[in-house]
Image (cartoon, rainbow over the protein chains, first blue to last red):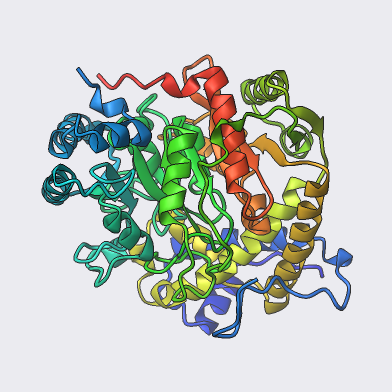
Length: 68
Length: 464
């Protein structure tokens, strides 16, 4: 999936939508860089190698169940 | 006269058990050393000599009565300041948690106190185990004892510094993307990320639930094995804790490496990333030494380093942001700049990307563990570069991600960082020894054989 380049105004709006309303302009610049970094990491995930039945690596077990 | 600073846990234990060393005298000697030198190194965030002397006096009385408890009885240790010690603040090196007093001991603290260890204090960390080295926090960052102008690694930075500086023979750190093994590599000590679930995380401030590991930093592989035996064990109160039997990490130490099959993951540090030539030369020399000792060495291939790192970071930042979202909304200004930016990377990761990263994690782990049908252990780089200057933000940022540790947080198997020499500038070089899940005893065996053959661990930084 292609991502369009984010602007500072867009990131400010996105931050506000999740309650991050106290960020200064400096913080928003950081959020912009961090989000670009996260998107680059997403692009590096080889998801094309996943089949529909490939399950997540669970770390969750029901209480009382023997581990592993 | 005994040089208390460089006693290993194993050496101290023998002396203490035989009543040839007083825990009080030992603790006082290290307290004096810390007071003399830590003002320049900042390993301790909260130094607690009064608690240490209480523990030491108790240990002395017990040992004199014939009640020696085991190898940590009367031996000093420290805790990274994200690990709870009842009654003391667990600050995570952050303004946000400056007043956060622990109401109970972490599981690992319980074990170390039950073993009769002498608690010396809480150790510096990168803020929330992710943001550092930082100069905009309530406490300064720890520095490298080999050269105070250089970074000591992190996030278990104080643990690496304190162990290398001869302040403590052992310290507890945590490792989510390499945070025990990075300071171990930078400071020239031994650091373990054990198999996921082997050491309880209860009472340890989380960074990323599915990637967090608790481990020890020591100056020798033998000591590290002793420490892991002490802190490992099933904890029903940690939902990630394994019921797999652990212990016996020292049992195979003296068996050597003859006939062991060692796979070298060279593409991590020569093709996927190009390590500093001195680091590559150090690792290559270590591999030759293992071959000289009788191991069968061959190169192996796994997925590209970048796939592991993207997987680790997508999961880590997503889980970390879930923990930090409330503070990020209410008090963003109270984070240091580095922690804030690194944590913010999880703000807008899509749910599908997080789930896909965990699906890739399973595939990467299964494929990696399948390699062990043809090898016993693997070795690869830890850091790609020797420690950079701590006051050079560009160098810190450049070297921060140049590492091959995150793959083993993804796969969950054990990984040990061991010293393999020094750069021309006198800074430590390191490699990792990696195993399949629950094979800690085997990787300690390899590390111990290498250590005995090279003696790097006998070099110590001059602090004067």
